[in-house]
Length: 227
Image 1 (cartoon, one colour):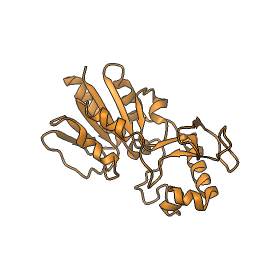
Image 2 (tube, one colour):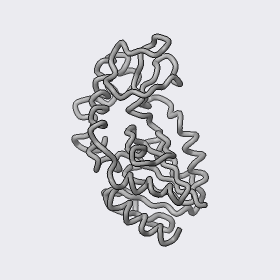
Image 3 (cartoon, one colour):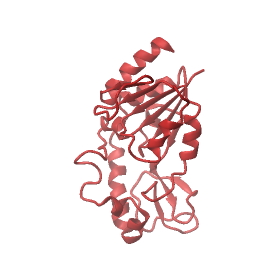
Image 4 (cartoon, helix red, strand yellow):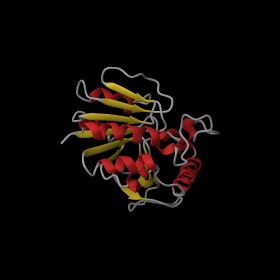
């Protein structure tokens, strides 16, 4: 059975109403990125950082998966499929996908500031005074700038086994995630879906200059004829 590996970014969740970081009015508006997405920013002003993610969490709980999420979930019915996402939302899971790797953490989880492996589900506001079992402050389970990406090695191993690679809604400019496409076996058929693609079709790469819901539908129609 062929292994389909899917790399997703903010663009796939944009149609669900979640703003993308690249938009002019994106999530970082009004905040220097290092204020709200770095260990240093958290150390300086933890209340600001917690409030920033509380707002993101509240918004996430008001939206749902879009058709692109649901269509990708259906792939698992007939094919070995792994989704590697840069997104911190849970829309892939809510659509029914079971094999999802979150490179940059998960918004609906929190972790101890003392032990990064002490992770718990968290769907309400996270405030100062919320502590782990050992009494240490909890923080968003998000990979901030300057921190290691714990899941990157697992993601690399998955990409090395890909028979088909699908990239959706990401500029592939943020490292180390952007490096993953270079770990798939040589000549692996690759499909890129983005309304404003920064690459062009070539021998092994097919580009769909479409938003995710349309591009995924077109791609799956194409793949269903060949798989």
